[in-house]
Amino acid sequence: MTFVRGNERIWVVLGLAIISLTIGVDIALDIREGLPLEHLIHEFTILIFCFLLVSLQTWVIIRKNREIKRGALELASIREQREDFKRKAQRFSSQFHEAVYEQFRAWELTESEQEIAILLVKGLSMKEIALDRASKEATVRQQAMAIYKKSRLEGRNQLTAFFLEDLFSTQKNSEV
Image (cartoon, rainbow, N blue to C red; front, side, top):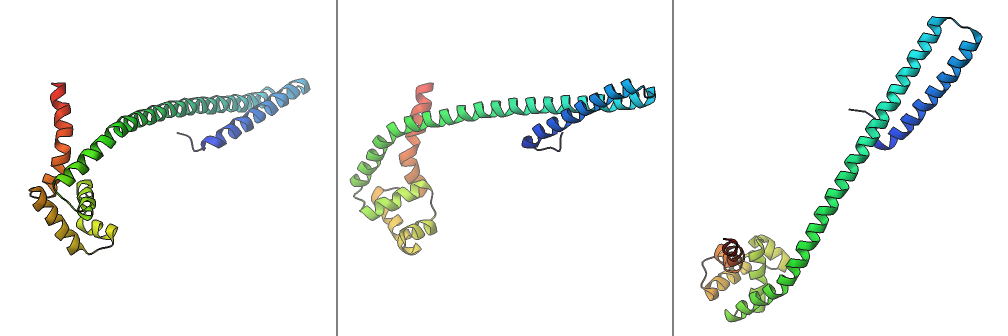
């Protein structure tokens, strides 16, 4: 684990490389001047340590870049799958939309009841529907009761199941 952020790693590597180069030049000058061996060993140790840190940071940068590329590929794949699903769903959606509203007309729902029925199937609460339609919750409840009576369904679950159940059971049956 490193405590350096990704965009700072390059600067750390560059700084360590400059320090290493400076120490290398200093060692060369110290050898020419004939300085004692223990001084040279001390500077070689610092140089080796700097090279190790440069190597470690370079390895971290390479590893992080690979992770980023892998993540970008995965994200691109997920986006492609999502777009493919959206295309398929859009083809089906207009036909499904028409079938739902055809059923609403068969039940003789008013336009207001049709809007509420859609919101019920979407899963909105009575309070959310009332807020969305700028009406009272009691009014929404009365309209929902009218929807259930006209459709001869017992409630929201049966209303939702009426439109969605066959979507899944048909697919399941065709796979068997």
